[in-house]
Length: 255
Image (cartoon, rainbow, N blue to C red; front, side, top):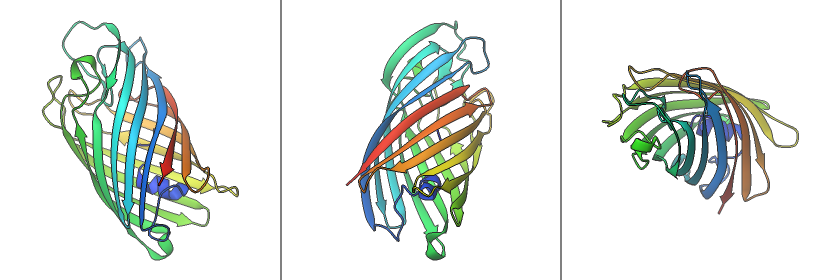
């Protein structure tokens, strides 16, 4: 899905996030289902189903978010959720596992331009090692990420992008190197009020981990009413750390 990331700016571009011109405070909870399949550079494929529980709080220019995912992984034991294929120096096998994945908490501060038609934000994210690394449900390390993001709206079109850097903790399954990630996207607001868009995300490869990621995502965002919001997407991967393709739908309720 859009890298949590392309991000708060993407949600603002789609009209499904609060801005200072809308509500000073907004709390929402949501969930969805996400499916992906890929070979991750090998001959056999691995399927991953993710059902995340998300809580989000917007307060003026601040956004705080927490995500706790439930995962089902069917495939190669060397494929780790969120990291792609990792050489764990053991006999490669097939497995089906379910359980909690690695959880995340994040905070972003967005500085808006005139009319809230542009903005630049800075944020940080902490990934907690809540997933079982032996089963590939997580990396077994607490990681910290920093990101700068922004958007610019011109009539019904919005361009958005981000640059980030991840500092990996000490993982028991592999030596993860710190890596850079970038993203760029565009969205278009339809006459119906819905938004459609494309986003491209890329993550640098570490040696030996994590694997490189390159993903193109097409998305559709829809506001059902004042309380319910939803988003659907289709993803195509182009690197060893990305699935071959993926799809998903999510919804959130605003209190």
